[in-house]
Length: 173
Image (cartoon, rainbow, N blue to C red; front, top):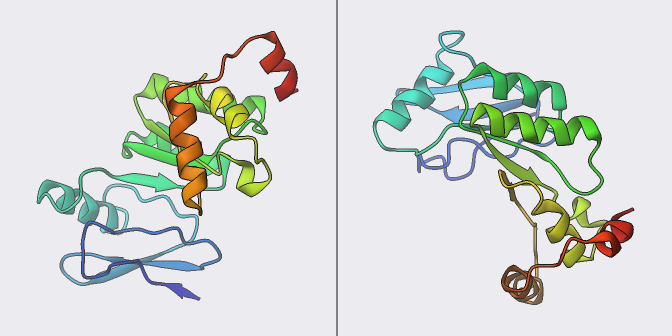
């Protein structure tokens, strides 16, 4: 199963979410490379990370990040010093270990992108999810909204942030 990246003619989109793929096609200059799903690219291991660095140096991409559903892989990538951002599932259903990882990313100066901030659609209470997530300054959520009403609701609550008090914490529990 081969997964081609979105916008292969546009180097701004070098990687896409490869859920279910065995390999990811990465358009590189020159040529094209592949790597197995779950692999973490390191300098010099196969030339792909170097191709990403070259694309960044040429101004074709701004940042090098990684996404993973595996906490171990995400942690390894963050600690490697090679990635500026890590995207990992993070919501009010996250474990203490995952919360500690978000804090570790802040300590490492690695950006943290919280995917599935609404628990993959399980949670519909946006104020609760937003209020909980705002406890982590370095976590930038991917809300996964599909309707204009959801975007309008998010914009409203961004202007009127929920108060995180004892009642709020009881709702989270």
